[in-house]
Length: 183
Image (cartoon, rainbow, N blue to C red):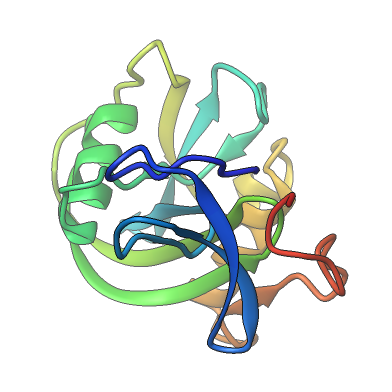
């Protein structure tokens, strides 16, 4: 992403070394462009030894079964985000227990995804018809026969089997040895 004008005051940006990295900074005010980030969250809800999954209704991942989740809003608490996303996509009320995994993908937009183990409170699986077109609780055996996204399979292993550490990082990032943005 090329940032040419300050989002605070509209003045031109210039290249400046800050913290040992060449960054874009405003010529007139204190704004520094630190990078472009996206933070997503996912919920892993268990009820009666079954895991809540939704079938994605659109791309990316249309047709795959995944755990419910989405992106945090600018002024929304991360816990509120995942509770909202589980309710929106699956019709289930749940509360956050703990963080179980983090995926780190430093790309042109640095994507960070945080997965939470959640306690089922109430509700019946009901897809929203926009982001998900099916929803339900599924056993480990059922999941093995379903078109579950690979990342969701990994999350299920981390959360419920505890055999892997909960960090999925991109070892082959597209940005290695590149600038943070186009200059």
